[in-house]
Image (cartoon, rainbow, N blue to C red):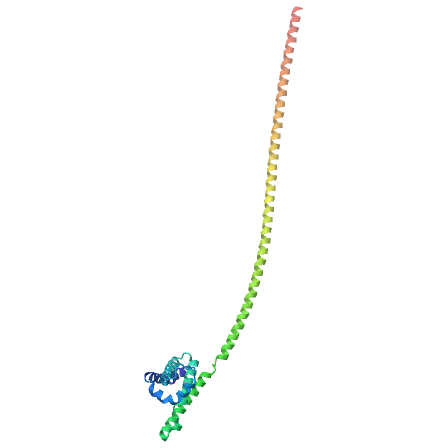
Length: 256
């Protein structure tokens, strides 16, 4: 339907654009035509900016030109059709009064123009008040999108809560694991210190035992050396005494 609508817009907008341009160029003929009907109505309406029929006709022409251009471009379609339909009301009320014509041909022509304007007015009202076909679908989609957004928000909030809980749990576990690791490292350090101390004590004991053995060996060697020296001296003394006794015995023998 969109190509047909695009094709139909220029045909509907062309009469309004042409009539608006002609009215802006020379508003007097139309003002003279509508003045007998517009003048009494304008005098009763105090909110109108002016009561001059020429100025009112120019304002109508400017509105017709603007709405025709908007309809041609396809912008603000609903508002434009309302304005065009409202613009036809003065024409229906003041123009093409066929019942005042005495000439049958003139009367027939005016009546046909009035019927055309009335049909155009009805068509514009139908277009302006026609509901959009996709309005229900759009509302449903909007409602579904809103529901999906709510569900996503709830899911996101739940996931965020779970993530926070998991993070707190991981922090607690990390702290516990860190304490355990610290205790393990302290235990290993204490064990290493005890092992080093036991090793140093064993090494010192070994060194002390070695020094004691060396001292005992030296003492034994010194004692054996002293005893040998004493025995040698005693033997030498005994030998000297024996020599003296033998020498005395030899002197006694010689004297006898």
